[in-house]
Image 1 (cartoon, rainbow, N blue to C red):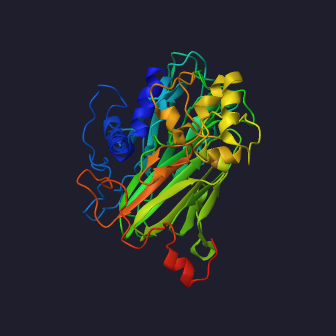
Image 2 (image 1 turned 45 degrees about the vertical axis):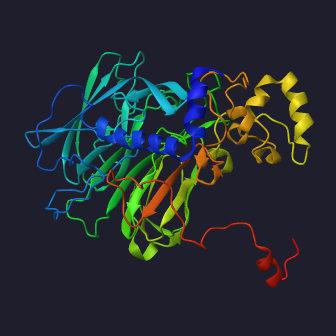
Length: 466
Ligand SMILES: [Cu+2]
């Protein structure tokens, strides 16, 4: 077994402690990313700059033009400086070696060393000046998706501006007339450059909020990639068979869980710049309301409850809910192939087959088959996940796994293997959070509130014939 694979298996196969380590590392990322975005140049303190601790809601009442910062899980917020009343940002388009999850790395395009680019935050009515430096080897442009601005600032290569050539720095400057949840992305050779990751979110906070601010305000960008097992370059030519489905550029079990206190009001701003797929994002254990799109707020009279929200390509959906149900709740795309990663899609339908001899025979002819195992139960679906196969977790077992690839399914859970990967993360609702702001481990269900094997007494009482 190769080293990178072994490390991944050890980490994900090592149960709760290893997962906790992964979570802790992921949680540290936004803090590290903040301030690192512009390299070594220090930024002066700003009256309304985000606080150092992004997970701590401001205890102070907000003044006009202040805002409670959004948090981009697994991502970062772009620092800015104020020059003569204008908020000045600097985006750098560049090659980025990006980790989707431990064991899977891509050679992508990003901004400021990240995939996706850092989130821009400003306030309704602000004037912004955004420098875009192109350190790629190809020309590019940046479009400010959903923002009402002068035509010449729209960032459409060849139409509203000439492309930004490698080495050049362009200046965009415009006012922000509307609060809302917007995006930015390359609008030059979009098929290639967006498939390579050139995108980010752009949050404009209201100057005088008309509704109570949420306690938590999270930002997500959904995307999809084609990355053949064993390769590192995303393939922009793919039209249908995407195999890495990401939330903020990460896949489960590499996604950072959202830890919130019971009773907190949570806002999720979910943008989708996938190439070809819409994503129905589903939240367990709660109902929510779609309160806004990238076109503006949904009128209160038009809102209705949901548990899944379809986020179309090129759109943002903003949902809100009160996290009133303690537990570990999946937040994921409900397209079943979008919570899968990479390998195993090519297998024939094997539902109902006798695994044992079949696995043995097939693996003699298709070495890669061994990597996807047979004991996870997923085999019964004609697909398989390496994680459930104890043999695959055994280091003495060398299944000739391609370097830089991940199995279809996720990682270890408190009660076995979690058979989800890709566009999947967790909302962890707790009465109290740990000192580091996290959930402090897996949820412990109170006695009698977890599904388990039926007792003989139960079966007899209720007249069930097992
Ligand atoms: Cu999806």
